[in-house]
Length: 267
Image 1 (cartoon, rainbow, N blue to C red):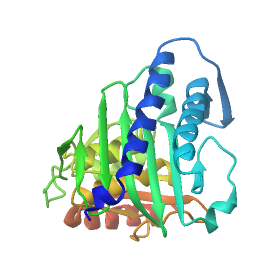
Image 2: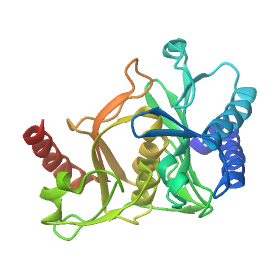
Image 3: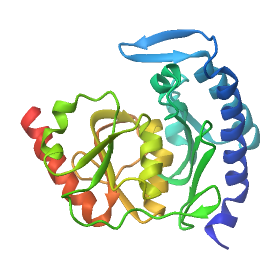
């Protein structure tokens, strides 16, 4: 049985849930909605909460025994004992959503034994649905995608955060071209599709920001590493990663070395 067939019900449910959440998001995009701050520089909107509720309703109705980890829900550590856990960000890139910049996405990942087995990243403005199943390759709107094959750092196009301070990227500006893109989930998906040679961040990120995107990059032939150069493990008690690099196998390790050096100098 192929990986796609093995997770057929999960794939259908994840896609349906992501598109339903996208409809809710687009119903509020550019319109009036409530915004509050969960913390400094961390807004949440009506769209985040309503999309999260729709995702939970659809996914857990179909798979009620699975664990759940979402940016917009209180973390229930019972998930640590679950065989399978859905890792969700209803809107990755809320700041872009608020600003009317179409660089945000719904991110839906399914983790089994610490590793993502299914990932969906959906940009409802661009109508781009990226999808991957472990061992089944990566797709954009049903068509196969692959990471860039560039091996040289010089001239590489790196997708970076719109809001991360540019001074942090001084080491990379000398050799690479930088293109600002909002959501990290969307950046990972775009790298998987070869729309950039890599992406990296100095920031601390949560599992829900990157779970789906990590699998999509990996299934598109790429590699994702944390700031220490290690592969990402999911459904941990502490959900934070410190720094992320994603690219093809050759470039990812080179970029991670540069990131680690920069982190040590600024740490």
